[in-house]
Image (tube, rainbow, N blue to C red; front, side, top):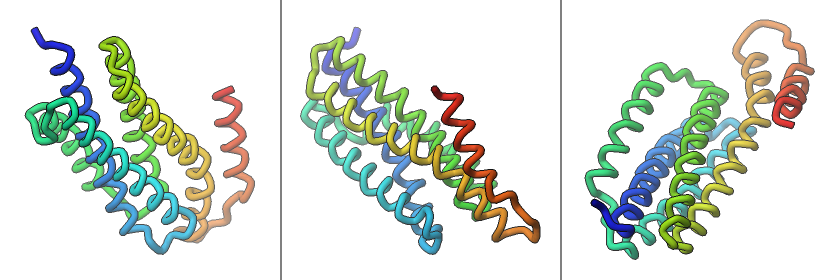
Length: 183
């Protein structure tokens, strides 16, 4: 049976792996969308914040006596890597679809941070719980921002990529719908 330290190492290692893979995808998107004014700055902020999360998680894992390249990390990496690889194979060059994928990955990070937080609290590790809470807040902010950004990006892409007339109110109407759903 695992002790508290081993359990915490596993959860922090899992989180480190997940955040590392999300960072790799977003960093690639940053480079691919550098000319897209409405999203390039967002990708930059997301990438730099995730780099900071990775650094903090590595540090915490080392403080707990763990290593960043353990078998748990490799297992999570394999699962997320397969999903990211499948997404990349079908990837168009549309920023809206990149944001959709980021929204999905960041939501996975939110539930994973929630699990890390409750585990750390249950095992009386306030430092790890506080780290999970801070990083969870950053990623939740990104999810909410992406949710509000996507309708405008989709509308822009429709106007740029297709020879059609678009209803310019569609983005604001969709944002209102999403807001009303979550109230």
